[in-house]
Image (cartoon, rainbow, N blue to C red; front, side, top):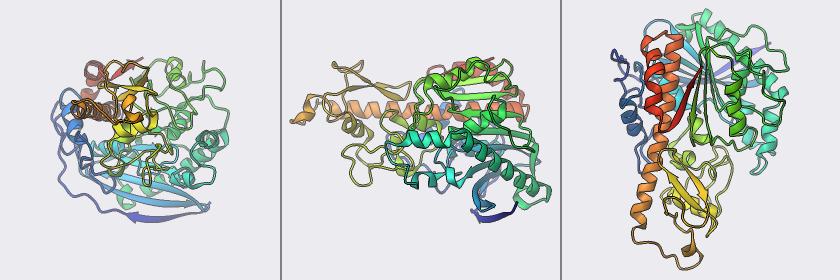
Length: 462
């Protein structure tokens, strides 16, 4: 089979590597600087995301060393099938452990930046792989229209599609191994003897298949041996055969990251079906990070400047490809699933979606989400702009309206940032414990993690 590479290297980020303290928690400022061309965070809301993440991790989270990182994005051609490959390589000494990251439905290899870059800064070579037909090009197809995502989901999560993606993944990993053996520039220091597989959404389906899930298909030959796996928003079809025994052969160390409110736009999995994976896993180095109400978008690790906070704090409204009524031109992004009316504020988006007197929203500062309630104003008694009787015609609002909603916005954005920090800390500690055999990481996972994140998520082990 033929293979060609079309490379578009990005400029490296200069800077001197900095190492963690003995406790592994001090080198946070650089480690949490997620500034690259497409993800540099400059605010766009009441809360500075990076600063909040840094401060929250300092208050009990886990952080490894912090290295500068260089990146490239390439297209490898496999018999004229385009496979996109992005790499993040830390400026770290010695052989580098490798994390292979598989993005979600309709995502390219630049997605998942909020997770991938901290892993690289902690000393991992992160290689993100996605066939272009399953990336952003997916949403350009005729079938990918708002309201028809379930049909798209059934197609991309099908057995046939999984077989295709696994075959393309095997080919890409073979190409990676060949570059490592040849001493190819940026790949020369990658250590394939210490490899982890991580995936989100569609990528999590492939991750679980390679981790040992019982699936009715033949796995590709010559796949490398992964030492551990991370499945973020794991796939579990609620209408398929009973889950009992399906994951009994998953023997390698595994971390599941999910949420009680993890509803994907295609409705392929449900929060309940995703949770069912945990009960069927055999004991032995298995972990589950389960948020109370983080949404599907937050778990993707993608939050760009242009889309603001709305993409990770509206679990009902801000789904892929849904237009907020009245959003107008520019208010809808079919590829990313978020609205982006700068300056309007997400509270007004909420109001426009639910309409007058249809629902009230209860702001949950710990969960970082909203829930609809009935009639009397919910637990907080606060109503977003335009909701309730005032919207029907008189536009009246309470005197303390601006202050209350400003505070609600701060609370929700703070919670979202802290949930992101939790994913970064827990996944990095898990990788350090498994691939670097870090005693500090193991101790934090065993003794400190549960107390630190308890207001936001459950931490389960078996």
